[in-house]
Length: 297
Image (cartoon, rainbow, N blue to C red; front, top):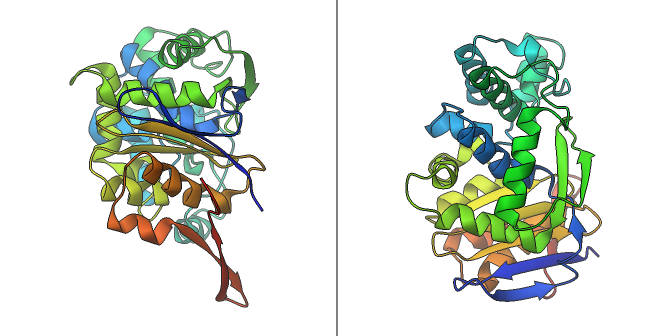
């Protein structure tokens, strides 16, 4: 059994559903990438469209993700040797096999956060900031990101950790994350907030992967923004201001998407395609033998 914390905000901005302690600190992990990208856009990051979506991505390492990351770096006069994320293989299984056949090893550019790191480096180049220590919490880039997180969430960052990619990780409440996503989608057209949200919504496969659940959800529901984070965290918002955050307490990723679908439906957001994501199949001997389903929301 996986227990979940859920915080859903209605279109009027008031809580529509709260399950568990959503006011205590949470580790949103990569669900904060839209806010990191927003800080970079405000600091002059000159990206639009697919590449801006990639700047906020936890990508699958498909060929277009890798090519896009290299394009961001090249636009800043850099190459992948400047990346400070860990070496890794693509999340996508077929892409991982292709990388092993072609290169025989993991590389930084294949790591799921490489698009964000390339954008961080590009932001540093635009501003004349050092590129060798861009992940240090005291670096001007990370200070700007922290200020943006506090502004959009409406909370002071209570603690700073280190994310899996090496970037600073800012702890706020789940309720604050939901508020921040709502502000992204309700911001005026053309504003930095909307530029990030619109790029992600227009190019969902660039923020995750061709077959990933986040992309399926955004393609199924027009105007929906969804971003996942490691250890089973999801955040979402739509064009009407309905928003939410989901955290599976034990970090069990197999429960994340079904609970997110239930949270979306609790917010009044639904589509036929969501039915296929409302459960997670369990396999034994290569065949389905059960499923993870939501008991109550």
